[in-house]
Image (tube, rainbow, N blue to C red):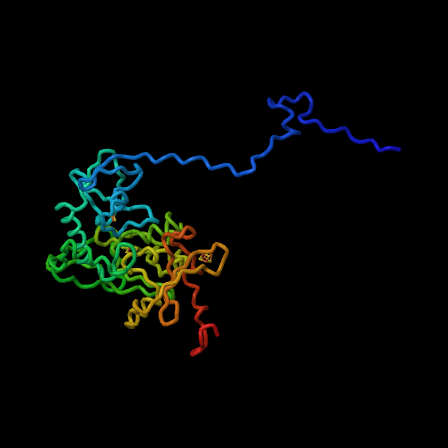
Length: 356
Ligand code: SF4
Ligand code: SF4
Ligand code: FES
């Protein structure tokens, strides 16, 4: 006896109106054999402006700094970084846009018809004064626009900055003195000595040190610890005026604070105020030799994210781990393992050959 087959399903069921040809449910149209092209990106809207007398067309959402750099013009910066939101606090990048006040080029956008002077007398004078005020109160020996590589010195020379004209440095603060300063309770400077942020180095953990005698209060570390990268908010700016300083909550030691030791703050600090302890100790012992170091890019071995590491190696030992800002995976950021978990590479018995 032949088996009774169930009736064939009809889509859509009779009486259900779909507004489409019912045939499409059983005879779908042939698919394209190739992946459709992405829709064309709209051309960026351009504005016409003048930079140092030269007419240019630039995308209207560009900063003045980027527009000038695209023309090959060198503008000094300290608090700006490609991976961070511009804060516009150091005022080193100012340019003249014809207004009463100079304009911070790192945070101001271009505009139609704008006229920019990047090196006139007013601009040079402002940059010179910014550098003098900073250098008279902060240790800028290692400072550079992006990395602590000492390259700020070239700008000091270019603008003829002479911080010594403010007089000798005032006495350094005692341990904890600047951290205890209360907002609004400043001592009156005697005018005979230049105010200083000099103070003892904070060494409170094995991974990195904080030398706030080198801190220019550029906010980069605060941004990297906050909304721009890490979202940990372990550090912020406490105090007001000359008493302002970067601090953990209640000035706690790092390992009692919210810090997760990602070290992303070290990666963006332009002055060396935040430094690997390994680097700090080598510098203290006068054994930090940049000409004997190599830099190698590799991939973090710890997890599947695959962050790009930039290892600084000296005497066959890793002495620092940075991450390139232009890495599409990390944008310069790492976690504690990639940043500081390198000792296992070199925990070999004394005298053993590499690879043993
Ligand atoms: S510690 Fe470094 S990154 Fe942080 S504010 Fe000071 S100079 Fe800038
Ligand atoms: S740095 Fe951290 S997140 Fe990045 S690959 Fe290494 S372990 Fe993973
Ligand atoms: S780099 Fe523009 S204000 Fe600091």
